[in-house]
Image 1 (spheres, rainbow, N blue to C red):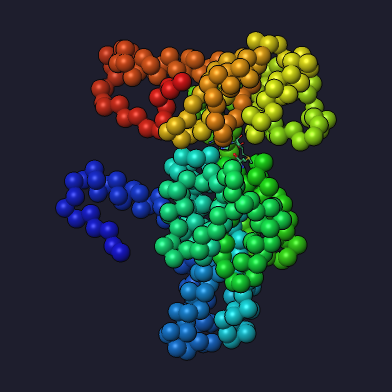
Image 2: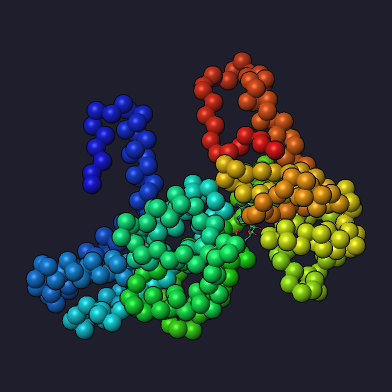
Length: 366
Ligand SMILES: C[S@@+](CC[C@H](N)C(=O)[O-])C[C@H]1O[C@@H](n2cnc3c(N)ncnc32)[C@H](O)[C@@H]1O
């Protein structure tokens, strides 16, 4: 379809133009240059226009197009030359798997690359926490395979998911494996990549905004801050049978921020281990639940009261726990936002008045 902005008010036309400019990745130009380079060779091998079009369509659908967009020109050139040498399209082609991070929830946190691959894929294999607004960006004819788990559902094991990705790629499908947050942060993306490598399936990994950074930003908690925390650690709170794999005394140190993922199930044990290893009872802590979504909730407390707050406020998954002095910054941010929203702040005389535009879910809620 075409988008016409003729006759639209200038701000609307400009908005649409800007949207189109940012949605088409700058690297698409490389595809044109690449195609021009091989145009003559393709015409010689495929004299018919329909054959030439089919050839280029295949280049675009296949991972050759992806290689060009990633700047891997030599690899792309080699594959095109092989296709031309064989004088036929790659009937035996294997699809490519995209291991894509969808971010923590807010669909606006999707990257352009994630969106492009969601729109390109033949099959979408997705988890439970992926928003419908993200899934619905795929082509209408996309094959959707849900592999997430909700209480009571039959759950696909990781091994079943790994084999599914290989099977689909071997059927020649380009598969978008859409995962919450970042695929390589507590997402088992490493295991899926390993399986693809073992089976010689082409793949690419697209990072996503992980829950820790997404939740912290939307909650007004800087994970590092010159005054409070010089490092940040992401830790799993899923403690399996014992707690021996975690260096609790490291986590107890001051001047750092510790973020626990999957922490709610064994919160009591986590808190008692931290206190046992020297964390002061009053160290600030926050629970961020459904972070970055409009239903986000933030509960600010202290380490020793974490469990009580979680129980009293009936905290729901998905949630992360942020521990460290940086949590205190949220109170400053909250007060600042309250002043802005209540119109209670004064504009210096030399500042030109303009309407305040609020975006995101920066309004303090809990
Ligand atoms: C299996 S891990 C996957 C993490 C994901 N790969 C990432 O990078 O965010 C799932 C855990 O991430 C955290 N999580 C994911 N999305 C969240 C959100 N929107 N708000 C709070 N926590 C979230 C929760 O701790 C949840 O138990």
